[in-house]
Image 1: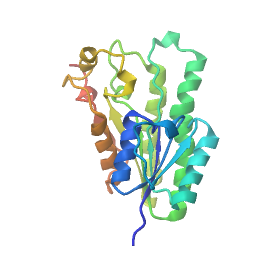
Image 2: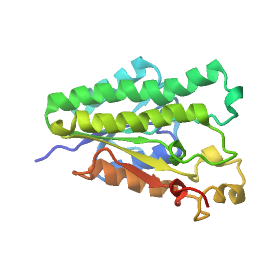
Image 3: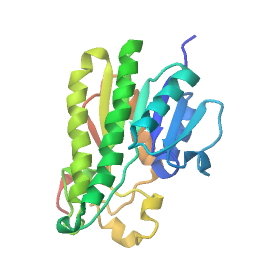
Length: 241
């Protein structure tokens, strides 16, 4: 009998992350979910196939604990969703050194440390693997008045790294893809007026959490897709509208 696959999910306590945890549990995966306060999440359904790790993903010790928990509890690491992210939007000249440290710790350090640990384990297992990271369509298609240049250093870096990694590990059967959402109906935007948010895509629409979850599930399980960016943004990546 084939063993259940084990997936690591970061930024898992609410919004897209919690939606991913619930979706992969439903699909029969073992899930190790992490965020600073994931054990207190009201959005994640309890399961015998779920392990929770509280901690800052920008801290190497947290990523090690996530990987160790997967191996000790479930015996493998087969997939990762790098969902944790901090988004700081402000004029370029207003970014501080502390802003930069904050966004790079979560968005880049967390991505590198957890993905390294997962890939090492996947190579040892010799059964391939799948890593999907959440970026944004703003990486390639900025929107006038929506200033987020320093945040884009991190998200653009993940896009570029994922393409390089897709090539580096293609022969090992380890796939790397990204999902680039536009505006998603999550707690991040709870204080933003919906009418304004709808102007940020040519379809004048806001994605649901489920739509992002569906895109991630597709890429995690698509055996011949690697190095891809899947935009779920109502067409915002197409350019001016």
